[in-house]
Image (cartoon, rainbow over the protein chains, first blue to last red):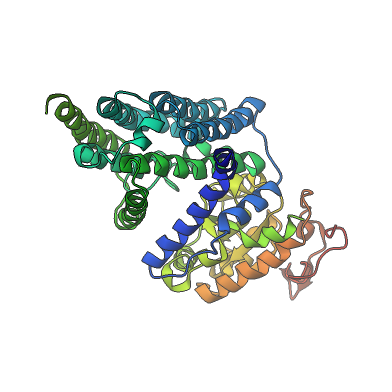
Length: 274
Length: 177
């Protein structure tokens, strides 16, 4: 019962988290940030804008992206199969890519290409994340992960690789080349406006919820450790975002496939043979 | 019911219509920690489809005028246009030159004029806040370029378009719902 409530409130929680993060980022830059409820003010304003639909497929796929991501968060909260969740999340991202390809705009195609490239970069790590938990617990089920004590000690390299993924999924420097705000205008969401941009915007909040839920799986059944991990990673992600510049797309792929995937693979080898 | 949220989350599109970059630098300074515009919820989106306020600098040069009008039409209603800097308002130091159209109000309807060369960040913030007040009163119907359709006055042989513009804060009878 409480799970259904959590699932329904997931976008609201994501919005509050996103708003809080903007304030934290602003304070790190020695300025006062927007009010905490700013994402909700944005939401209300976007609903009130005139909606320019490019074509119905584009709008529908944008909504599907949001719905699929909400389904992913729902399955994560209800304790589903981790591998299925990773692939359902891939499907949700693919909806956005398909939406971006369904219009004849060059900027949209550019953003979609970059989204696909970044998927090549981070999906191996997410799959290895699921496999690592399988190797530890004998089952992909999230319930099994949450029932066992924290495996952070034996998953240290995977945790480091996962931090790379967090930085990319939350669209933060140095890995935000997929959106590349102001360089390629807007990435895959460039042709959305008004109400349909609101759906893509809310999908970003759900992305935050999803990534931080996966992060807290490293803590197993230890809620305190989960809270500490969340706070530390939250601050670290924002610190790195404020301190670094964006890397180019090819470098992003090289860094991920070179460093992060190697770390994750090393961890898997360690789990298998040590 | 959603109207009051319009001024709580104004997203900016910043376009340089041939300016010397002085006003652009001042606009970017507004978004920096000293004159923080983000505390009003302002984000500098580069995307016309997702912005409300069109901040334009520069007297319009030949090549930028098409882009100016295209960007303006790609923004969804309701929207406001803020002309930053003397060049954008009337042509500034470049008035009557062969390569510039004197200001953007020959092409798109302007709501707020921010003078100065370069306009200071405090003045730009003032202009943006005034633009938000105008934004709140607008409907979602397409704007008629009021200035272009009204008579321009001539003073000493110089065509003066400023006097026939709608004053800031003065809502047209057809604009309020």
